Image (cartoon, rainbow, N blue to C red; front, side):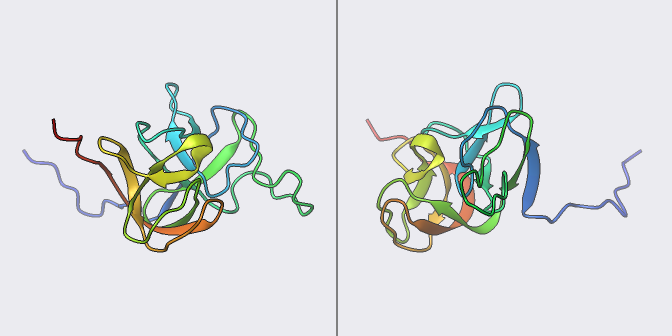
Length: 144
């Protein structure tokens, strides 16, 4: 007998909440990944499989700005996993380029074989916010 899925709810939310696996000084608009325990940490390279982007309100919300975005181990981190969002660029990115994780969770241009987080919808310089369409996949490796 087959399974009946009538009435099954599918979560349409573009965000999820996960526990931090490490202390992060500022997670806001940075690329996150799962660690070996299933907690989230900053992605650090294009070879890291990206989960999504910590939203601008993630971490502490400090009115002085001194600790905004800070999380301790076990704190909740709100992460955008689909649709269009903003990621902090670590390098210059041109509209239309594939975006992957770079050092410290910052966005970088995807190289051959990298895990792509999305496609840049704006051109930016380092330390600017890049608007991206989240479309996760692995870029083809360089041909031999």
